[in-house]
Length: 235
Image (cartoon, rainbow, N blue to C red; front, top):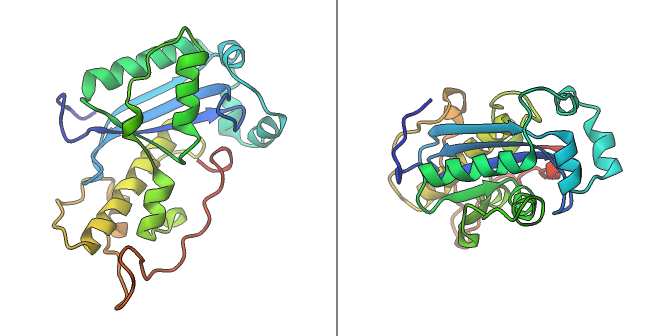
């Protein structure tokens, strides 16, 4: 575990959740988060909590299609096995908020898409518990898909960071993808970057983004990015 000082360069948090619905009101089964440096790919403090089924269902909505899809994967099925390590939703949210506040000034939070992970968590903070305060500003919400798309990065070719459909592993993968995408864009703009400090297996993807002569600003001359599936079907 990295030793990180308050207000360090690891101001960003990558957050992933597993849910029983795709709506903003979805019941949350697990929360994974990792602090990271979006300019170097360095991963820092980790957070992972599985939520008791009873508290998840009481606070959120359940979709038959989402559950039907989820039970096809072993990792998702494991979330339905009650263990002593599971905590009520309010506890998981409170501990996540306390960690983010204690380790970061002005945290930026990243979800997979613009309207899934962060939106669902905000709904849970306000409506699904006892109105806990959201630990980030609406001005500091970001999403991976937009950044990866802008960089022309082939998401599915990046090595995974742990087991699929595990919220913490997916949060780590997301942090790596965000960092790689940002570095490609910054190189294309002629910026000098610090060395890559993310997982070694992802180092080969830390490459420049090429622009064709005559291309309009911001238009990359790259192979189109494969479509990234919905949050409940991919990360």
